[in-house]
Length: 342
Image (cartoon, rainbow, N blue to C red; front, side, top):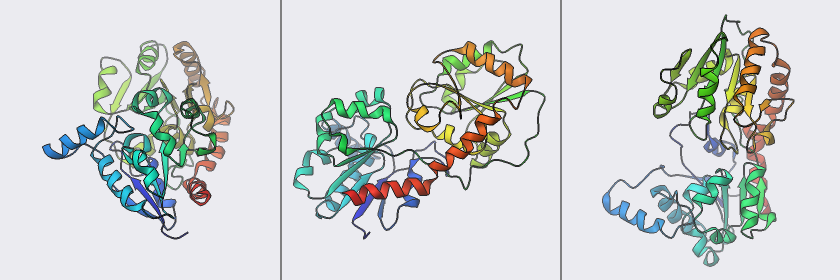
C-alpha cells in the first residue's frame, strides 16, 4: 500500500503511554500520520474562529484540533486515490462532510462515543451520509447511524486494542489478608454504585484502591477502607492490575473500555456492570457480570471472593486467552483491510 492513506490522531490527556486508541498508528503500515494537539485554540482570534465554526460542524466536541484536521484533510483529499482517517472522528469531525462531494478522496471516521453521547454530540447527523466508512468499537453504536439512513455497508465494527507487550500477568501473586479491590477510570463510571458498595462493605475485610482523576475524589472522601490515586505511572497502574484480587467496574454506559482490556491482559478477575457493549469483548464465561446498579450482587460476590480468592480464576484465565484477539497487530490488520476495500 503506497502512502495514499493519511491518519489524523491526537493524544487523550488521561491515557497512559500504553493505553488509548491512538496506539493504533504504531500498527498501520506505510501511512502518513498527522498529530494534532487536543484542545481549544491558544489565542483569542483563533478561539473566536473555532467557536463560530462549531455552530456548523458535525460534532459539538469540535475544537482547534478539529480545525487543523479539517485543513489537513482538505489538502489530502484532493487526490482521487487518497484516504483520510480521523482516529477520533466523533470529537474532531467538523466541516469536511459538507465539502466531501467536491473532494475525490475517501473519508473514514473511528467512532468512540456511547449511543447516548452520540445523540448529544453529533449535531448534524445528516452530514455523516457523506462519510465513506465508519469504524465502530461496539455493536451498540450501529443503531444511531442506521436511524439516520446511513448504509450498513459503511459500518465496520473493529474492537479496541490492547498493548499485550506491556500489560501481562505476573508469575506469582502473593495473597494478602484483606481483599484488594481495584477501581479505575473517570468517564462514564457509576460512582453512586461505588459509594453504595463501599459504604456497605464494613463486614468484609477489603481495601478499595481507586485510580481516578482528582476531580472525582470527592465521591470517596470520608469513606473507610479507600485509597485514592491519581497521576500514577504506567508501571504503577500495571502493578495494581497484577497484584489486586479483583477489578470492580461500574459503568453508566460503555462501548470500548481500556481498563477492562488491560485488567484481563494482566490476568485480573473482573466484576463488571452489564451495560453497553462490554459483552462484545468478553462473555459471561470470561467476566463476572452483574445487573445495572445492583450493589447487592456486587457485595455478595465480594463476600464469596474474600472467602475463596480462586473463585473467579477460571473466568480470568479464559479472559486472558480471549484478550489475545485484541492485540494491536490484529486491530491494525483489520483497519488496513478497510482502507483496501475503499
